[in-house]
Amino acid sequence: MKKVILLVCGSLIFAASFGQVNFIWEKTDSIPMNKSQLYSATKMFIAEILNSSNEAFILNDDKEAGVILVKAFAYGLAEKADIYTFDYNVTFKMKDGKYKIMIDNVQCSSAIRGECIEPIDGNPYPKKLRGISNKRAVSMLADLKWNLQMIVHVYEVEVKKASSTNNNW
Image 1 (cartoon, rainbow, N blue to C red):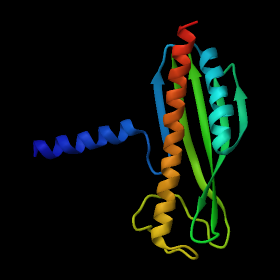
Image 2 (spheres, one colour):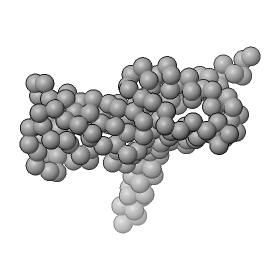
Image 3 (tube, rainbow, N blue to C red):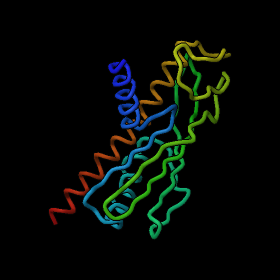
Image 4 (cartoon, rainbow, N blue to C red):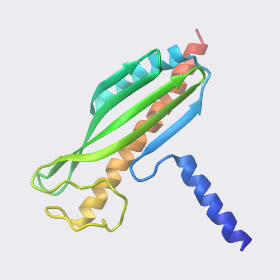
């Protein structure tokens, strides 16, 4: 019984530390940078990384509050010429010594030749689909999840790189 409880608790702790639940990502971390430095590093990330790999635009940019909200788009290619567009929000929050990145509100905004696919976990995909095979839907959503997770990971790497650069001045 103790082993089962430890296994369940360990799984929950691992899932919470990973920071992704059903197309919502959240990562908070401490870093030796002040809010202004984090703001600058975040703006560079948006310009150089996020905007270069996705279509993205800033919806809210409040330097004093330390909040930047970005609307971004990702594309999925299914069978033949079926193209799916997913949009999502990326929220950056920063204060002295700490940052938070959150990706949420992931939704299918358009589909060419098929119906929009709701971004939910499941293999097989838990709903009957028209215009795309179940296997392809699961694969496309796995690719989307990987791409969104990479945004969080690359942001973390870029902020840490900026931190070491700021400390070397």
